[in-house]
Image (cartoon, rainbow, N blue to C red; front, side, top):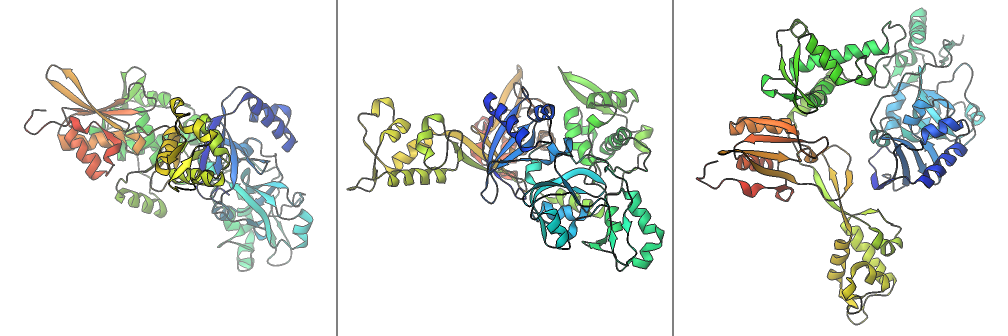
Length: 585
């Protein structure tokens, strides 16, 4: 259902009465949840929002978001948990096991076929047709998908495990999962550690939910050569091979590894830190905001298939880790502005940096990285949208929309045209005029006009309707799903500031809204203008940076934004501040 990008209709905070109703619905839909667990899932005071969206096939879905993650979604008055919720409550639904290779197909939108099911020694869970079930991978009880059973357990066994087993609704790595924090499934040990059953009959390997060592042992006990050609296949790998595939992201939960998860995360953090210093940072980058260092450099050095999470390390916070690195005299960190730390120096000759060996990337990741370096910046596609205010809800309710609905301009025009025709408002003598009924009068006319204006031309009617709607916009970056926001997109703002009697600086803000990295823009301008540049937090803006360039550099900045980055002029304000020819900057 969420294999492709969806379209968000509205995003609102939940009301107190709706919150209580949702908690009651959760308790009724999932009896296995206790009262306390239902209260954890639908908290009483923490932020909880309702997102209404259209799936790519047109299904109207309501998603409940808590703590930035989708926790539940509702389709045709049925509640379903997301994988984020199931990772906290893995026993909420009956679980069926499959192979890691199958997950890729499920993420792509495929249903789960019965030949891909792994039958544990205790047998399959007992379910009826239409029951909601979780899907897990061999060796890990953390669900990676949810689906509806296409037949009962007895029918599955009667069919010889052939045919479609589950209609998959939602998976790890689909677009619903991507709308959250994109965390990887945790490792949850299977309830039983029984080794797989190997029957006497050649070619009938039946694997239970065993750990990787169990599967590896099965291969090494002389069976590989005897049954090599006859082992049951899963994709292009035999079952023992499939079981050795790494987990779906995060750290490898190998029980043979004596290191704890925290120790592994500490090692990964230090590896990415040293990798970033050795390969991605130059002396000209300083001072470098610690947040930029982490987001733009450290995370990008994380090996493929693993996920860096500082909260799971012994340091817990970036500042504490950097403090430790400063004590080891690898870096120097200073608070250049109140509450904002920057890396100001690195000891490039430190033994830990000089002795660090850069990990070799896999062929796949190397190809991706090489390809990404060749891709130039492409401006986002920005589309104006319209939001229905309360004052116009009556006009739009016949078409199934209400307060907060997000519409394109073409949709608004079609709704108004259909409304006028359906209510016989088109003038019989002049098809270019539309009679105004009480609803249209209340929605688009000023109070002084309501007793004097009885008709309007089509173009005037449509223009007035668009003006009365609240602004919104959709921004789509290349290769990413669209982002819909209310209000007008803030333009890139260029201003000049006087720093002393005869010195000016150029300040540019809101670069991030257009997918531009302020540090990259600053470095480019520093070379082209031959002037010093700094990147600092933008005053009055949360999590936003501004670039400051010495002198009046609006001309260089305009050429960079308009000609090289190809941003539309309408999204840039302040270009008129460029110095006139012959005038000193």
